[in-house]
Image 1 (cartoon, rainbow, N blue to C red):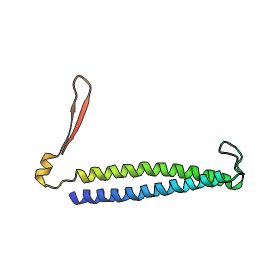
Image 2: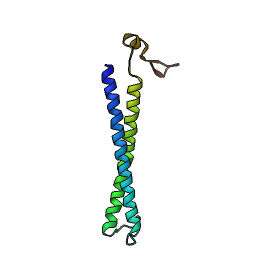
Image 3: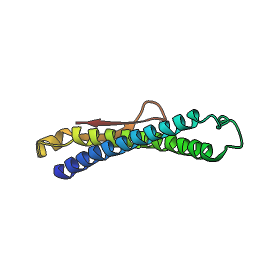
Image 4: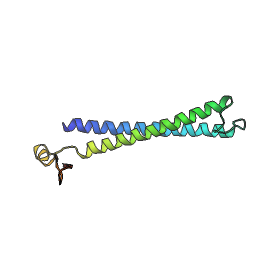
Length: 120
């Protein structure tokens, strides 16, 4: 069981790195498209409804890359957190370690309330 958790943790860590690099590349490419747009004097500005030729493509691509980089950042961070949790909570001591690891929920004070806890 520990080997599976370790493999999943390492896989999530590697996946996180790959996704974060992809997000950085998407951001850099989107920024290059913004620079192309800004460097072309025929581009009327992002608020204009009609965008001539290349201006429309640069604008659409920069917006798509901004979205892709933001999603990639969120997914990459989520995978990194998952990897850390899996690797930090990995059991290494067999039955003795299993006895110390516990998850429990119970009723809180008063008539409503629920409390859960993890001990490792």
